[in-house]
Amino acid sequence: MELKRVVVTGLGALTPIGNTKDEYWQGLIGGKSGAAPITYYDTEKFKTKFACEVKNFDATEFIDRKEARKMDKFAQYAMVASDEAIADAKLDVDAVDKLRVGVIWGAGIGGLETFQQEVLNFAGGDGTPRFNPFFIPKMIADIAPANISIKYGFMGPNYTTVSACASSANALFDALNMIRLGHCDVIVTGGSEAAVTIAGMGGFNAMHALSTRNESPETASRPFDATRDGFVLGEGAGALVLEEYEHAKARGAKIYAEVAGGGLSSDAYHMTAPHPEGIGVVEVMKNCLENAGLKPEDVDHINTHGTSTPLGDVAELKAISKVFGDHAKNININSTKSMTGHLLGAAGAIEAISSILAIENGIVPPTINHTTVDENIDPELNLTLNKAQKRDVKVAMSNTFGFGGHNACVVFKKAY
Image (cartoon, rainbow, N blue to C red; front, side, top):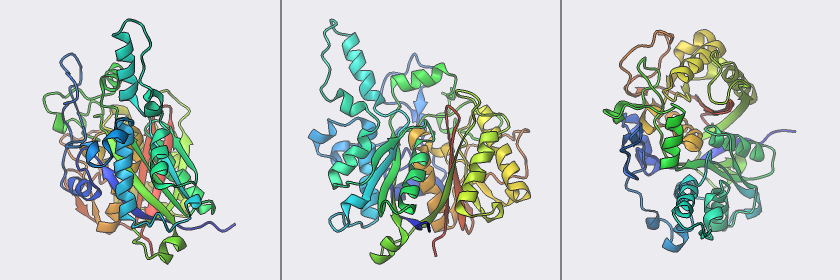
């Protein structure tokens, strides 16, 4: 069976450094940090008092007030980003065969704020279970793609992938395969997360996963730097319209890039820690290249998982050196989490968008906040430190890994 070609025709982003795709890109190439003191709640007793919040966002500017009240913030973010991607794709939703248009979305946690608030309300009451009738529909992770499909009438495959921080990269790979195999013409895919809450921050603090650099939050996310002390929690959404090539060509759609392939693997090692030698990461990148029909030397740019954790950054770079050998030093490697923080289930989507825009614009965004060399990292690797670099990017890879050892990798190439 001959596989269909799959291309990207629409992009949408709602991030801590920009509330649209274009604002996000300008933030990336400008080396903008999205980290700042938390505004959502009183952080006095919390170890970490900062995060990468979405800024200047009012859901009712985009969603009917009554409908917005029925949605957790993670679903609101999904709606706004997907609306932008669909508009960007200039997709005539009344002209397409809606039975062949699906929505596959990623979310690592889902409606955490809703869950937190309902439980707190109950705990603060007299024991009478007075729960909001929208509690469950607002909380469940699959409600984001459900809301998108309901709005547009898309009747194809509709579900959420949950694999912690790899969730939206998993969604992208599923969407790719659904179109490749001829089951769909178009898939709206991506991911969203809104975990900057007392439960989210408290939980990650308890794991000692977050940076506690409260005196300088804007420099706290510092992947590959010797003084890194944990990740910075972020929130937001990224959306992509994936389309079968001939379908896109027939309607004269703009094509950003081709989705060349993807890969999945498991560390099978630890609940939260990566394998120190990056064994699962080696396998996922090999799987991805094989699936895409590409050789290691074809890759120009890798947007790493690069969370700014002591163990994870080193393990990933070791894996890159193993897979790409001498060619590794010719690759522009970066971590955009240095600017956006870690968007958990939405990370794969917004980092895929960065990879695609690097191809389109011939610029690789920087890894900011690097000041101190880590002796455990190969000095010959080009980590695109502190300043964007111009580069003709023909092939870009995006790595995303989740707690539990879930590894996902997607690769994009210039479309011809």
